Amino acid sequence: MTVFGSSPALKLLSSMKPTHQEPYTLLSRRWLTCSPPKERGQVFRVMQWNVLAQGLTASNPRKNFCQTQTRHLAWETRRYLLLMEVLSYRPDVLILCEIDRFDFFETKLREFGYKGKFIERPFSPCVDVPGEGQPDGCAIFYHAERLSLADLNHRQLLNQMKHSTGSLAMALRLECVEDNAPLVVIASHLKGGPKTEQTRFEACQDLVVFMKEHTSSGDMVVMGVDVCEEPGQIGYDTLTSELRDSYKFALEGKSPGFTTWRMRPVGEEKYTNDCILYSDQQLRVLQALDVPAEKLIGGAKLPNNYCGSDHIPLITDFQRVLAE
Figure 1 (tube, rainbow, N blue to C red):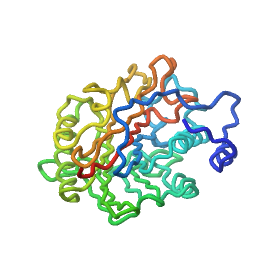
Figure 2: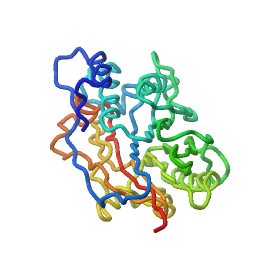
Figure 3: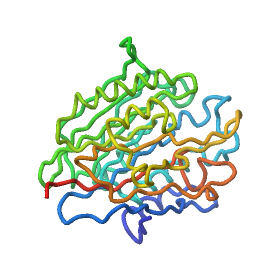
């Protein structure tokens, strides 16, 4: 994690620190080193994170965070931890889903050189939450000193009958400031639930179609997605038949032990739902940030005073592959 020192990031975070008297810091994590960078080829960092829509922190009595302290669900606490995480790791590309406070992130991250785009999720459940009413969706931020925006595309993902699956896809075509090399960044958040596997499968099929609609041969492609299912299920396998999973590469064929972990009235929910996928002919993985040790999470699981979401952010450092 970055040490802020007397930086502008520290000044901003100090002005936002929650009033509750307890330690607020980030979970300890280790880097999974795959290979050292080569002399040629841009290196850039990608973060993918389901940041937990504020409108969903207590919107359904059957699904609420039954053992989570109320203060750890408050926006005052969560915004501090969410921003601390982003500013600690300073990704060049930040892919967020289930975000219903885009204006907050856009305003704060602008101070650190980021620009971003947001697309609302179709049929967002946050809209009907009393006192909230802000739709959630996906957002992609990029550091403007290194990347510039060339194009934005988005649409709902469709099933085989051409009806909406309730999921969206967005793609930013970016260009490296250094040499105008194209980088296509795709974000998506699929529909969760044990009875929606077929819907997710068809959404993943259409997500592959969407990707091919907006990429060309030779493009660097990165996709950050909350698949809402485990590796090995049919939707995930559909995506990884086209792109490679950076964490599976870093873990030598294994998947992280979890990317989301929460307590609900129906019991404990611990899943590996999130991934960063990439085109392995154009990009190579340098390192990925492993998930925290399970013993650090605590009995009430996530969110807590160490993580502002019920998901853990995934981070991968890539390098562009150039011809020898």
